[in-house]
Length: 396
Image (cartoon, rainbow, N blue to C red; front, side, top):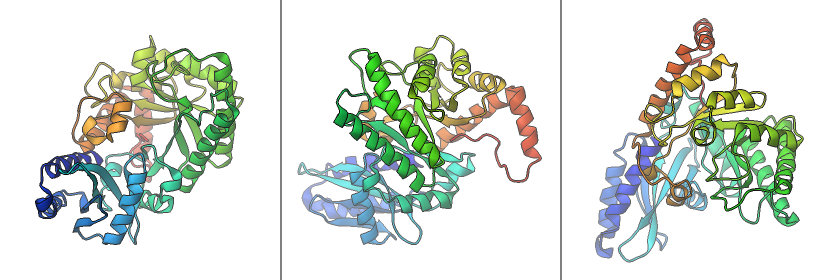
């Protein structure tokens, strides 16, 4: 439903852009009234550049404005609307005819996340956010009410980079990672994903041994700190176009050992393995001693049932080889991402338009691989005899 709401906001924004200033209020009101007809939206609003709030729905305007301001400060465009029953708020830029830019806001119903849980998912990976600008208590209650646990992601940026030769930049990078561990704990999470080892983006040169050692040492300390707080810290192995630090499972094992931490864990992704590994199954086996998160993504970043990666075979092989960690699903479509995130990830197309359909398709594909595995079939039989397991497949 997150995808549908982002798409609806984008469509509403395109309509606002051609409205004259004189007709803006009436036109915006009509568009907002139409927006709340979506089954997962209980309130919508336009926050104009001069601070006016044009709203539709049942939400308290002050609470909606507060959540909108928080979402606008967040890199993900997400926030929790405070109140007796918190709800998730999504924002999107709204260019206006006079050249200024407002913000469109949609508040999801408290039931919106339930459909994700009903599809068999137990966790949701969050987009990047600033812990200092986020109402963590409200977000935690929002996910708890839906029976879901959030998984934040950690990263680095220029000036705050644990691989840097500059001591101040390294300290700033470590501070950012520690802050994300604390935010994960505040959200009730038990896992922190991400690319914590350096700045994400197109690398222009190889990483030297000194930078890799600096990075690993810092990340290892944070992983130990996370473990003390009941949180598993993972680092994602991504392809050569996104980092030069860690591109393969073999490099990931070396990096984990270099960290000096017994608690740092590996996150593999089938999309990145399709670029870097000659044999994905062998890569999974190589990382198995440290592997805690196996993410499933297709070659085109769309539905798991479409693309060049044989997801069911990968799932079957991992289970039969002894993988017992968590599973994740990752897909991207330009219309549902903040523009700068889509640009950063080179997401130029829209391989899917409906988020719930994506989640349901992914679950069917995963279950196909699970059913083909002797380990998976045995686990399913055991699950049917248990009273409280729900779906035995537990993608994060």
